[in-house]
Amino acid sequence: MSAEQQRVLDAILSGPRGNLDGPFLAWIHSPGLADHAQELGAFCRYHTQMPLRLSELAILVTAAWWQSQAEWQIHEPIARQAGLSDEVIEALRQGQAPEISKEDERLVYRIGRTLYETRRVDEALYCEAREQFGESALVELVGIFGYYALVAMTLNVFEVRRETSQPLPFAEPG
Image 1 (tube, rainbow, N blue to C red):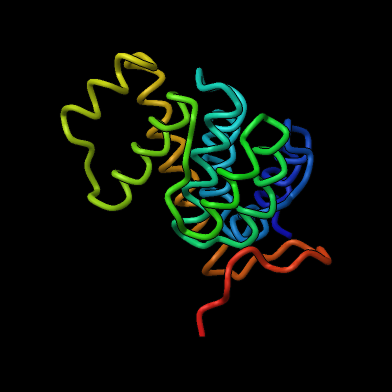
Image 2: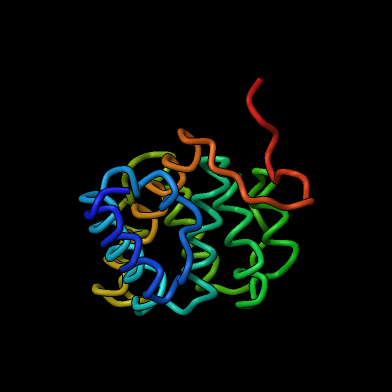
């Protein structure tokens, strides 16, 4: 390990994550990327204005969209503990539109799906989200979607898996 890799590893291990799990297994090979990505990731995961339940919903929407095995495995239990219902979680995993009773969750889901499907958010949805969350929290929500898309792509390309006896959440492409 180079001195730069060791410096980044030490920063990751001493931070709130405390482990080299997920995309960091790949990113450590590029200390410059790892350094910046871990700072952005720490912000997106621990310091946004979005309640944990909503940020974890955004992460699961992303993990399901990208069918990112490790991202789902890491965040599904966190989302459940944060208060997302089993029904919403399972519908997302199966690629179905969940029946969501909470307006803020419905809005996060709609923003994520619309963003991924159309690469835009129309004016009506934007205004509704800005009204519900505020401008700065909406910016942070988009940041969560973007950061976790980067994570999902990294995990998929480098085939990062968690060691677990649980079956993979998504079928592997044949």
